Image (tube, rainbow, N blue to C red):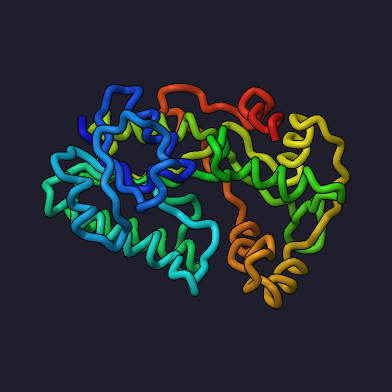
Length: 307
């Protein structure tokens, strides 16, 4: 198949490109001018300069393609720079759907996120609205909702690397977020999914016609607390780390005052989503990837030893 990947220079998108090309697909990508060096491979079938608002560039990217993967997401907004959830996570999907219809590209796989909802944070709402727009488009759509994704960042930022740099590497205690008033009862829980499994799920979404019209929540094989994930990251990095409990409510108060500053580590919306947990049954990821999902352990976190 010929498959377009929107978001190919990002962490998830770069792995998706590698997976699809390794499976024998021709891949076409949209890339912002000046970002060509971030592409994961040099043998990509077609590279088109442009951005998500450039309808002609999107159409050229999707021209002659059988399918398209949309893998664009933000960790936080920078409205003064025009970087918003609305633009990247909703309007970009709307524009790509329009380009797909124009080009006759019928198959569309959207990488969304676990826990999206309305009402919710701007992140959650734009992701869900994009899903709804795609499902109502008449295209052969599949939506993937992964939990937190980890894996070799290939020079990009990803979840475990960020935790290492923010929590483990500094010579101060790490923060152990918890909900409510009790660290023991209010543990923040997640089902981290390995990027190799998520990319395989994208590949199989194109191979399996039964995935059309369906939404899949993708979670790894373990439900882990925030504290346990920090411990595992520290162990791989060969560090001993003191973890001090921190109520999310107190951190949200600080974020209310300071999250407008670019260097402040978290936003209010990120803390709101953190308090909602991010878990998913591993069965759907196993079904799509065709194998038992990989665990958040030393074998898949080895890349952190180079940090």
